[in-house]
Each structure stands twice: as C-alpha cells, then as structure tokens.
Image (cartoon, rainbow, N blue to C red):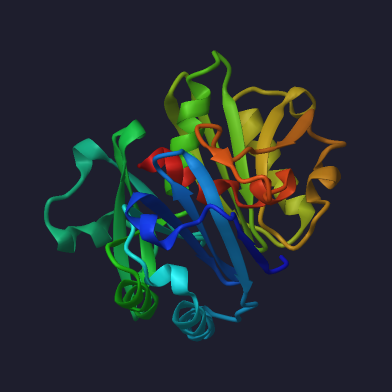
Length: 281
C-alpha cells in the first residue's frame, strides 16, 4: 500500500477538542484519520508504509512516525486505535469475568511473552472483544497519544456489520482480507451470527473459507453477495473471487459522515474499517 498524506484545508489545530482521532496498525503500516465531530466530516487521512517483519520492527518504525507527526501531539475529543491481527475472541456480556486474571481463560490461544490482553465493549452485540497486544506497542501508543483507547480490528468490523444487517431481512456477509489472514462475519436482523479469522496463503484459501461459511448458512456461492475490504498487497483479489462468488462488492466507509473532496472512492474503501470507528463513538 502506498503512503498517503491528505489534509483538508479546513483542518485547524485550534479545533482539535472537537476532533475524533482514528488509528490502525498492521505490520504493513500505520494509518490515522481525523474527523470533525461538529461538521461530521473527515478532514485528514495519512498512511505510512513500514513493511515490518514483526511487531518489534514495527514498533521502532512507529516511534519515528509518532515523533514526527505534529497532529498526533494535539488533544482530541476521542482517540481510538485498532490493531490488525488475526488473534481475538468474543465473550458475551453475561459471561464476562470480573477478575482481570480470569480473562486469559477466555482466550483460545496462549498469550506470547511480552503480550497483554486488551478488551473493548461491542455495544451493539452486548459482548466484548479480547485480543493480545504486544506490551511494548501498547506502551509506545499510550506514552505518545493522550487518552488513547486500544482495541482490535474486529470492533468496527462487527459494529458496522450488525448495523448494516438491521436494514435487511437477509443474512449479511462481510469480509476483511489481509496478507496472511481473512476475517469473515455474518449478521442477520441486527444480530451477530458468526465471526472468525482464518490463516491464508493463497486466493484459493480465501475462496475455501468463504464458500464454507456461505454453505454453513445455506447460501449458494453463485448467488451470494459479499462486501469486502482488501488490505492485502494483491490489488485485484476481488476480481479473482468474482467467477466463483455471485457478487463481491467493496465495503464502504461510514455514510454517517461526509469526506473531504480530496479523498477518492478507492482510498475510502481501503481505509473503510478504520473509518467505521465512527460507529463506535
């Protein structure tokens, strides 16, 4: 993904108290957007390539980025950061443990040394997403960004999915494609029916998992309509899926706010999940 530096001329450092700051991290890069909560308008979007081999390498790149970005030193009305990685789990609100030490019992994989568990409430589904954060990455973000809320990419993904499903009587299928995993979610009439991430290496892997989920809900792949975000380095991946899936459409960024004229449609689609943090406010 190419680096981006898009700033609307109406961006005003003296109005940051009315602004929302959205950020996301993946091994490929760091992105952030600024939205004016008064005008309900996105006015800044930046992306920095890192091409990191691991989170230690990424953290070093992030420190340099944070030190050089003046907008990130301002105070904001709200600040959200999402981590793009495969591992997470969802715990229903009724089963959420009160003791912090019990959270590890609800996590399906072993926590690696140097990682901490982060939890975020998904209000629309009365559940909580729990995911591992590299401790040093959380520390870097919390030291440099005021009042930051840390979460997982599934938070806006699920919130937006459930909201869209409330508009129709059919099952709604959303997918987010990364370089080594995909996240597939299914919702119906405002209720989350399925969410999971799968390890992938090829387009055939994506097709296998997607068809498996569609068939689980008794939807013929040739008749299915799937909304997808492509965060991978394979630009034409939707076209490769098209012969086997009825319709593969680009998932849109939040329609509850407007966007500066400098943002093209393809840019908004690339950063749709981060921008859909707007629905988590």
